[in-house]
Amino acid sequence: MPLRFAVLFFWSLSFWVLNAQQPGPGDYEFKVVADRPDALYQVKESVIFKIALTRNGEPVTTGKITCVLSNDDAVELKNEEIALSEKPMVIVGKLDFPGFLRCKATFKDEAGKTLVALAGAGIEPSKINASAPVPNDFDSFWAAKKKALAQIPMEPAVTPVESKRPTVESFDVQLKCWGDVPVSGYLVKPKGAKPKSLPAIIFFHAANVESASLIAATEGAEAGMLAFDINPHGSPNGKPLEFYQELAKGKLAGYPAQGRESRDTSYFLGMFLRGVRAVDYLTSLPEWDGKTVILRGSSMGGGQAFAVAGLDSRVTAFAANVPALCDHTGAIAGWPRLVQFGADGKPTNPNVFETARYFDAMNFATRTKADALVCVGFIDHVCRPTSVYAAYNNLPSNKRIINEPLMKHETFQSTTESFRQFFADHIEKMKKSVP
Image (cartoon, rainbow, N blue to C red; front, side, top):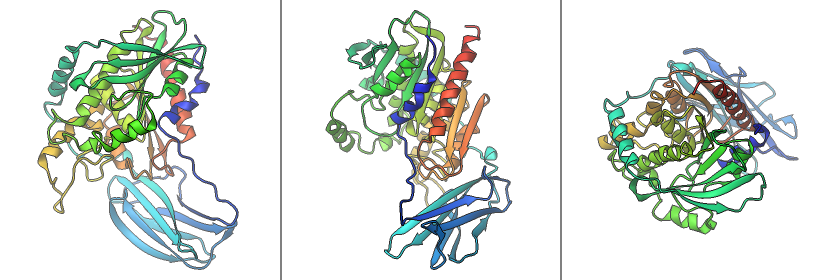
């Protein structure tokens, strides 16, 4: 079956797509950009941020704006007021170390509404280091957990699900897993697929409490893949919205912090093992080509992709957009910021600090040999780019990163298209490889 990657545009929607609003008649347009298109600079090199404020296409020349420069939204470095005039507005800053310089400009209009414009610049980000080394017993800890997982039979509960697409078959799949929480997802495959004919892909979700996405898995199958979309928490699929809202307010409230003082009780232990179990299942199906396992995720799903790629050598490629779960132990950590630090810079709870190291994307990155494509937003305040680069820089090889200087915590269509091409190229590469 030919791979029809054009349909993969929807894949990003399984995680969310945010589009910038365009100004309407009478609206202000407020922009900040670095003076280089790629927004990349050397340590101690001056970064010039250009600021523009217009209304109805004309420059605003009265009033003032406030500009704050920070070390990736963590430490304020400069705070300046700039009077509006007909002259171009700029603010200049630099970093004395690898990292990200962020500019936040604010303006209050005549109605008292505060407008905000953001831009970011990378300062030799390829030299950003992990905040802590991989634990000495990292491999033995996870080997023991995977061995215990292997003793749990999958016992797949596979229920046909109606599909509006006549070319595919759809199923709700429940797999027994660690801690009595199942893998819960939708498997979709092309009708009539021959044995050993299909590459496999697993979709991981962001931090929402929700059903697996039948639509996303269907799009993957229509592209000629064995597609498995799993929800993050082992919850039943296809329930009313209210069901998931109650879960989010109930037993899953604050789930990232659940069990975070011990590596044996961390919530992410079960989540990551569910990812491994999903690989177990896909690679047991007769239609799997015996070679190719791809992972795809955004935000927390991106962090899961890092983790499962590091835990399972069967994974041959993964794509992670604005990945979470990166550099937990760093001062500029990404979501969910498991570790809190005191005024002295030390962790307020040493047990949480030590536990977090076993669930950090930057440590799993050191263990994978999979091809990797990562996308980072320079003005992402949820999964800050410093943390993403700490994980990305730990990947050993076969990697590429997409820098988006004006991207927040979102998915650009261009990212979706890049991921689509990455998957297509990888599948072609694997077709030519020796099993």
